[in-house]
Image 1 (cartoon, rainbow, N blue to C red):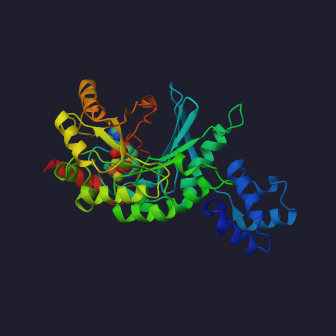
Image 2 (image 1 turned 120 degrees about the vertical axis):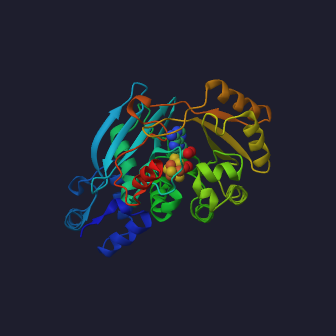
Image 3 (image 1 turned 45 degrees about the vertical axis):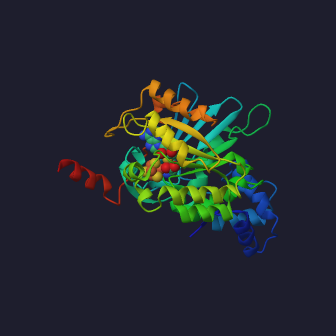
Length: 361
Ligand code: SAH
Ligand code: SF4
């Protein structure tokens, strides 16, 4: 079977071209053609020897996931829907903001961690994305967006905050990070790539050793009792362990704080008392807060906190000296907001079925 070169980081591409009897540096040229210029046709790679182009045409492919649809929102947000086989689809979102452009990348088809307020979690789990499917999201978006008039890449930041739990697919995410951070790939610095996790502690330690990119942790609750309910992975890795792992991570991280994400669910986790409890919880962990107004989706049982409640919660944190941002909801009109990414997941974990049964009891 043909090798999909989108699966290979630079080191693997070097091994591959050497295996073809070529010089190592050809790998860099190839990498640039594939990722920088978005070229998938070997015959167009004009600075490669014709003999190499012919070999590659016979043995290799540059095969991103098939593009099913793309949408553009009134606020400039863009979304691409990509087919990842067997009736499954994933979504990638681009959010322009001043001189920054952030691409939100998915790591799995569905998610097994089943946070109760998350659309992806409700859909159940199908499988991990391959490296080619993860990096293929950047490939499509970069091809569509290209460079701005100053010659800078339009995608200046990547957040692993799309569908799925990136630390549950660390091997493939790891290789994709290699390519994102490579000068011959997407040339992003570690500060400009943020991985968001609900807190798989051993995998967080591995990420620290291999690619300490900027870290966002989905906290969402100030104590174990509540977090056990809404972020079920907490039962395995409770808050004290998670926060200790965050502090270890910071020793290697490119930024000197963790961003704690906190989804605002009306009447569940959004009182000033919760905010004060949160302050006590994070006292030893350098952090910022990102409050995310809950985005409803069909079948969700929560309501978004009222703006006054979000403001009061924010004020408690700010008065204690913390930097707090409240996420603006973007791309709402194309279902591209946080937690609304749905794609199409053929649920192998039969979670949707189980939930329907439990709801009927
Ligand atoms: N699995 C990872 C990354 C993907 S989710 C994680 O959980 O961190 C990205 C962010 O969107 C997380 O903070 C998640 O809690 C949040 N989110 C999920 N569903 C949401 C919803 N319906 N409304 C608002 N934010 C949501
Ligand atoms: Fe998975 Fe993240 Fe959604 Fe939780 S919030 S179900 S970890 S994608």
